[in-house]
Structures are given as structure tokens and as C-alpha cells.
Length: 102
Image (cartoon, rainbow, N blue to C red; front, side):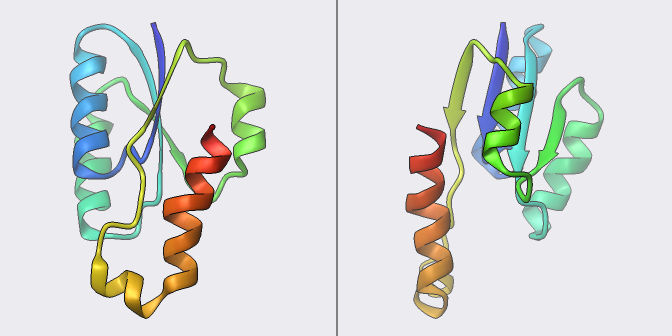
């Protein structure tokens, strides 16, 4: 099965991608890779068959290329302090990204 995971460089999304890949699924993840967690997960995923796309790619372009059977949304900005410091970025990542995925 083709599976597309938004937020695939985070702990939950990356762990899920790894598990599904080992089960034989064709997994592609979309993630924003600047945090230490994302860098670690990118390294873990490089040892699997998971395809990693950078979140800076326009989602409309992703939909043109990828026709997955399943889309799983695990992305978001989880740090409360960072959300307070950057409310617009928090809104974009936690609300607008979800709306775009839908």
C-alpha cells in the first residue's frame, strides 16, 4: 500500500513510517527538517526504504506526484513556548497545514 505521512520527521510520524516501511509498505514522508529530532529521524529513515520530502515543497505539487492510498497527518508545532513566541508560524503549521492536507 502507498502511504503518505505529513510530519514524518517527528517522533510519532517517523516511528510510524519506519514501522510501515518494515512491513513492506511504500512510504513517503513530508517533514520540516531543522530540529535536532528531525535530523535524527532523517538519519533513521535513511536506513529504510522511506522516501523523505522537504516540507518547503508546495503541497499542490506533492498531490500531483503522489497518489497514495492512505494519508496520515502527524505534523504540527508542539512547543507551547515557541507557539507563544511565533503565533503566526504556529497557526500556519498547526491549522493551515492541516487544512491543506484535507
